[in-house]
Length: 107
Image 1 (spheres, rainbow, N blue to C red):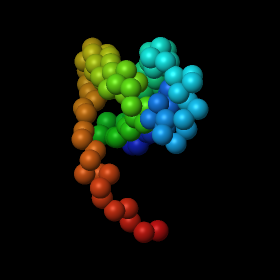
Image 2 (image 1 turned 90 degrees about the vertical axis):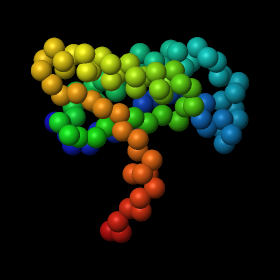
Image 3 (image 1 turned 180 degrees about the vertical axis):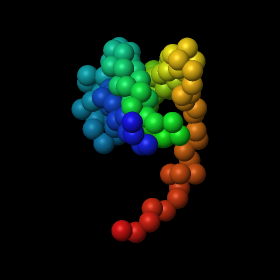
């Protein structure tokens, strides 16, 4: 088990449209929906690899709620319902804003 896990999942890339305008030609709502099962599977595996008290970061370059919030909500719900049957190991959501605004220590 790991104390930190990064799940940087494949996505539609619609969050990069401004710097990569060529994405527009292949973009569709269906791409985000099609990515959902793979993203969910990756995040669920990441949560399984996490030790109690650890932190998992889910990352995409998409702005699509189907690829972001919906994946996280489904993974937390499924993980917690499975763990409830097994006796613990629940996942909770944490607002990471304060963590992102902290200055990293110098090496």
